[in-house]
Image (cartoon, rainbow, N blue to C red; front, side):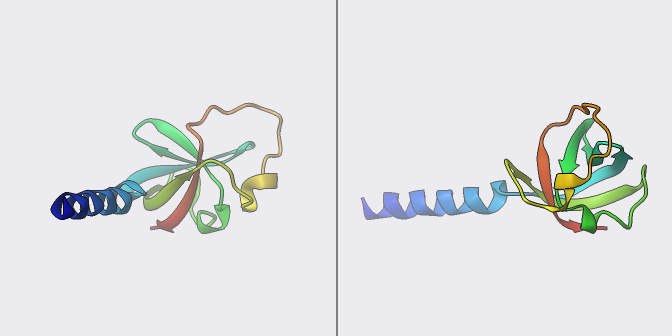
Length: 98
């Protein structure tokens, strides 16, 4: 019984460590009047903390570490300057980008 609890705890720990974020994913920076996005595997994700992406121009290929998030209070909250709808897969918070 004790061994099965330890095994379960170990598996849960591994799950939390490895499934929390994507690591070093290749992406393309996209900018338009609705915001800043990263395109990965043909899907666009809106960036909530745009200050980390601001040094990269539209179309730049980057390597990024990020977390998918549901809601945010980041710098992108007021970035949209047009009333167009741009389809995306949701919000991401960039941890590292190069």
